[in-house]
Length: 119
Image (tube, rainbow, N blue to C red; front, side, top):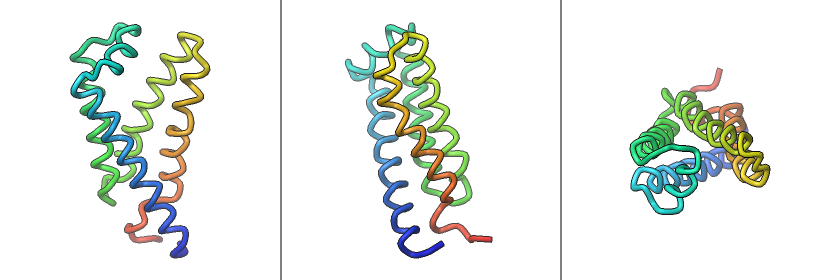
């Protein structure tokens, strides 16, 4: 992998980790905006906390080369759940907001961890 691609991938990973922590913390602490969004899907405070914790766990795992793929899977699965809820509500605007983050996780998996040994 070229140096430019590694730098770009590192920036994408750091952005994904930042967004994972930001959204995960908002879910874990039960911020009112998150609680409002998830309450319409009958997800209570406990469920919201579990989703927030798993999002933050995924973000941490993305940083470690050995757990990189698992962390991305966890983050992508959480985003996919939210997309499914938006689709169930026929909320295409919500899907359009979440879709780039889902595709970002897939792109990061494709590009692989910049510090991992390349084969």
